[in-house]
Length: 165
Image (cartoon, rainbow, N blue to C red; front, side, top):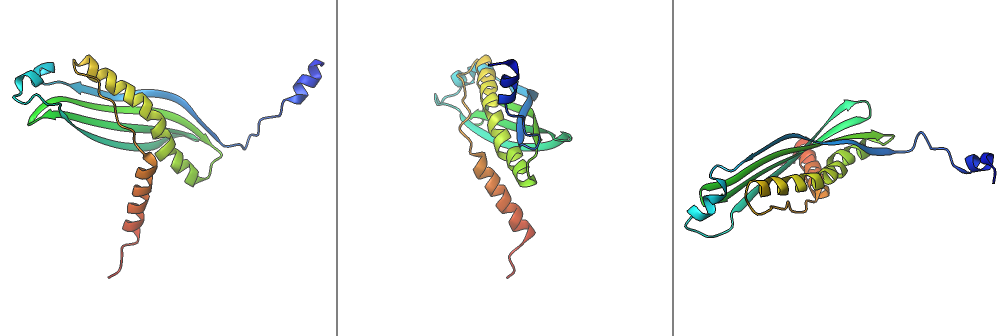
């Protein structure tokens, strides 16, 4: 096979093909506090595991044409009774190149696919920070961003079209 035949056999890339590509993944902001160190469990009368309150939020903004930043905000508070064991706040972010998609699909990428992608990084960071704070690792649970997206869309539709009584 000659060099000309090899080049001709490769199809040209379609410039109108949909593109979704992560460009950068980074920690935008991070804070870990253990007010009593790892000794709060020994000071507590109860020898139970702490209860952990988890709050997640996402936001997206355009950085440039076709380039979007998505931020996954993770807030965790571990308590035993009324004593705080540890607090963690993390903004795991990513820049995503999104091109040649309808606006509805772009919205789904920004609210479902990108947060799912960032969640693995956030899970690793949270576990590492909690461990370095002197506590057993905490693994973020699986999150269904599809359900959160559907709930947000339903709430938005309800606010735009309130029921008439």
